[in-house]
Length: 401
Image (cartoon, rainbow, N blue to C red):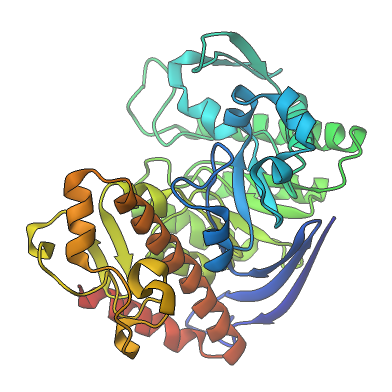
């Protein structure tokens, strides 16, 4: 089941500001999601270092699972025993699973792509495996995810041809990849229907850095009438200006009565740019991955907790933040007089000592920042002040910590 209701568009839509921001609700089998939304990534059935209750507390409405990795471990026999991923990981809200296409792409020379599917050696035990659009649908049906992604070929930024490897993917390569993904999309749709999957299947726009190929991909998916549309193949190594060029081209063209999902993107600035171009849903490993590497996001820029200047700093990571790391049990930010949170000095100490509490608190903070950013976006859209919000966002982020 999927029902998308478009509640409001930015008053600046169509003006010289070029805003296509949208406010909506997405009703799925396991709950209602308020959009725009950021979705924490739980690759192996867990968001790294974060308890499910913490995700609830910070306002996570929907999380991701990874089809490829869950197929490898624990396997479909275990998933069937638990009736799917929700009961297995004890998460009662919606889940989106990717198709495995990106993971197959990331295997590089370890995989062989054909019209039928992809042959590769398991990165876990070396077993020879074959992943097809039909098998991807079967796996995701077993996982019982609320949103199922079509199996696609993630078009690389750099060429995959031996003679040109290391150069930008040619138009011919990008077209071949995009057309293969369209044929796979139809096969996914047919298998999804055969399985009587009660959830929702999204198609994925591909086409590399070529705007006209993106248009062709979108037209092909619209003809198949998927209930939701994703934009893939961005944030795969291309320069930021190319990513933004493609996003600004294709985002506003996505069907207005369906939810729009930008896959694997990105920084706080990327999320705001995505919303401005009509995107409703985002995911990225950046909040948790950066947290484990000592980089924290805040309203006033990014903070490197490993820097020596934080050794004795009593401030929290973000003086305006109400997450457990910054505000403690009280939930009152430093700016509002709270002093229950952990200091930058303590987080610096934990990182230097390799204590696992360090990346756990950092992950909680980063995810809270992303989720709260999307809440502020929704509030601004509700109030009709999104343009002013964007200006203040960029001013604050440029101020620095």
